[in-house]
Image 1: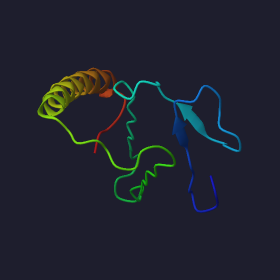
Image 2: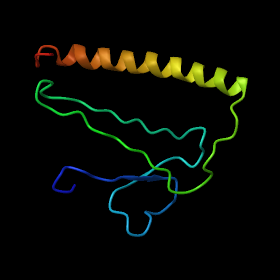
Image 3: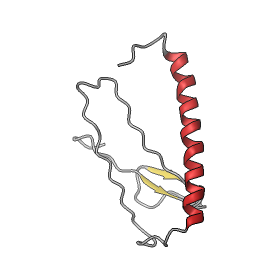
Image 4: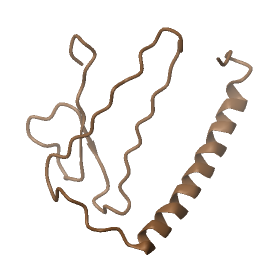
Length: 104
């Protein structure tokens, strides 16, 4: 992290950490299974500044292939499962933490 709080993370499916990379996160090699979720939390909503997140593609195809109706259908189904699962997980977490913290 630099003096201004900026940092860089390289995300790739390579087997080994890319040369010269300080922060590296390995993903699955199958693009259908690979996913990156960025989450931001706050301790003090009134005084903390929201992060600015930038994603830059370094290699590979620059333009995506056209999306098919079947791909949209599958993506919507996966989204529904993700939202349901995340909601359930958060509800369980919040129930366990409710007595320990004041939520704002």
